[in-house]
Image 1 (cartoon, rainbow over the protein chains, first blue to last red):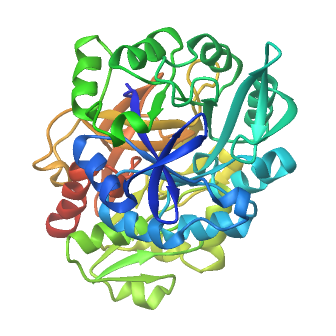
Image 2: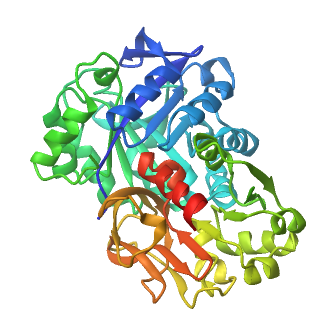
Image 3: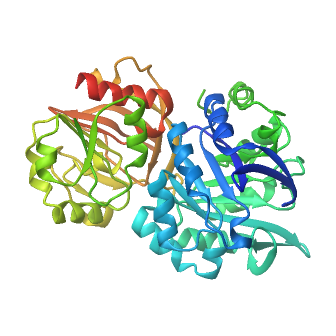
Amino acid sequence: MLAKRIIPCLDVKDGRVVKGTNFVNLQDAGGAVELAYRYYKEGADELVFLDISATEEKRKTLIEIVKEVGKAIRIPFTVGGGISALADIEAQLKAGADKVSLNSSIVKNPQLINEASKQFGAQAIVAAVDVKTVNGKKRVFVKGGKEVTDLDGIEWCKRVCEHGAGEILLTSMDRDGTRSGYDVKFLKQVVDAVTIPVIASGGAGKVEDFLEAFEKAEIGACLAAGLFHYNILNIGDLKKYLKENNVRVRL
Amino acid sequence: MIAVIDYGAGNVQSILNALDDLKVEYKVTNNETVICNSAKIIFPGVGEASFAMRKLHLNNLVTMLRVTKKPLLGICLGMQLLSQKSEEGNACCLGVVPAACVKFDESKVKVPQIGWNAVKIEMNSVLFEGIEANTHFYFANSFYMPVCDFTIASAQYDVPFTAALQKNNYYGVQFHPEKSGEAGIKLLQNFIEKC
């Protein structure tokens, strides 16, 4: 059977990995390629690179980094941030990325999911959904968490699934950077509402948080960033803990 | 020289990166003559089956792929295209292996299957030499080939399915060896050195 995945996320700005709290207060966490290689050796199942400056500055993600990362590691990785056209997707995949994550661009034009999925296969298309609670409702945010939309979190996840996305990367902006645990209740609602795999993001602070997301939300993969960048948690140790608690992982 | 077929269905860069690790000489090509002058063939593929078959027809590669006597390794969709047909786009495939590819049941498991699955070796093959039983490999597929007479390794995702196959000079893996860490590189090395 399929193993649960642990995915370090590298937010990249100008070739450096950064990590902030609630999408702001960015701190430098190291070079992208060297961190990618470290995680590969520690047993990461996949990596995600998000060019966080891409959308706001209307810049394309750093294709050179993608090429270097592809040479350095032998596990799959996803690239996102500022990708808005089929040509952008093709360029990232040709550079060596396995998947692209789409966020603001698919809110603007959901049809992009259908087209991309048809051309590159659903397995290459990840819908990144950033959700934050506004007046008690889970609302979808775009532009790196800066702009609220009138989309409901669960409804939007169902729609990206119907449009042909291969996976959902679901970030709780409420929890992001707080290390207070994943938003398990909401994750479970999304997992039950869609037929594609869901990756949990936002809030991981300790090994128990991962266990809870896998057990209670039946999530397929857990993503974390700062926790790994600053060596608060070692990926190998985390996976050993999960295995001891009867979660199927790749060691 | 290894011919890596690039026929416009999926990118080959990751495979080339892995071949570079192994210091193997290769050519990326869609040219029948170049392929016929190679020692071995790597036949990748991602995306939709009927679209990929159309691309093979447009590149005039179908007959060559059906009759070649060179060791050939189909990867992911490349393996599925060795079957007779696929439910995906109702594709008529190469017909090397008597099997038909079908979709995973969305009411039972998340589709596509994305992630690392444990591979059970069903039959001895040089392809898996030096690779431990139940090693995890990386899969990304919505359709699968059921277990058949030519299955040499299987995995389980709702149902058991063909993770690797062998028929004469034809080899196929449903997973991505180029994305499966050191075990994947070992498998590629086995194909290059031993098949």
